[in-house]
Image 1 (tube, helix red, strand yellow):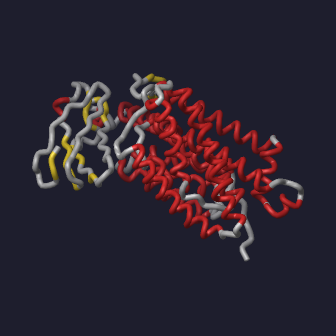
Image 2 (cartoon, rainbow, N blue to C red):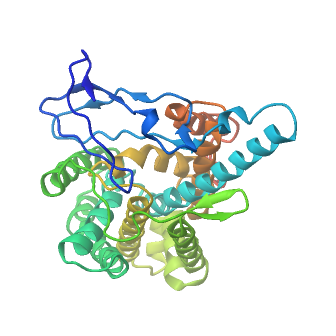
Image 3 (cartoon, helix red, strand yellow):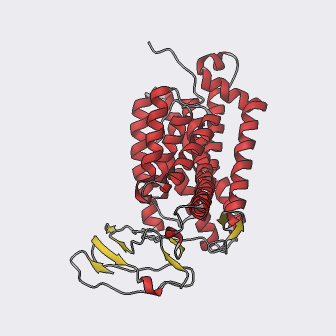
Length: 379
């Protein structure tokens, strides 16, 4: 590793899990070079580029990733059945990864969509609720020595309670004072900044990992290779999304929530306690966002900006599916996740989010209300 000017900083060797860490004295742009000769004989860097130039900011941790592939895999995409087979195997792997990412985004987007549907609030602090869940699970897991599974359950419960208190003590009071949705949206940006730097103070700017399930050998299922934790995580995410969807359709609270989302005044005149419904939604939304943060931390490392990093994708999923619709958030998020991963077949990984946002723009040009949204009269 060197500075941008070529001055040597440090040479390090990865540990058994393939991770490494270098402490730098000053912020700035650095040059990281991977010694390709030190890789296993059957592995090479995907794309052939073994140089990265990260920018390190004061108080923050910058992550550098190298994607490895079997040696010669890049040359297998040639004429004949071998090239076609390699392409479709890679497409299948990226589709699986896209579904995994899409389900995580869907969990986070579901809470955001429910809150928007019942209150009209576009909550820019929702990404910090995602981060909160991951940090709480990390605190119970590492700080208190609990296994990750009970630590995650406790973190989800605590995050749900904090979501209830957040509305009871803060957002609910603003609604009673007649604060407009635009003003509340701007306030949510301030809340997001406040929480982000609270996380920085208590968690730090470094990247961390849970004590369990961090490094697992991959399981090969046809053309797809993934760690067992990915299959379990996807099952949990699907189960939670299905349970919440059934609850919205079949339970009295779910029907009341849909009534409040459709017309709060009419719902109140029908005897529905609107404030109580909104607090239940905040509780569920906070818990689901926390679960999304835990799943995101399980698939990658934890850092205090992890919620901020996927916030744009969460909004893209909600907007693409249709603002205020729970099932729309699911569909939109899956589309976003799939396009992000599958697009790397044709575009560099650094530009993979551009494809998802381009799809968002194209769909909204044709269907402004989103995939499952309803047309509304304006004016």
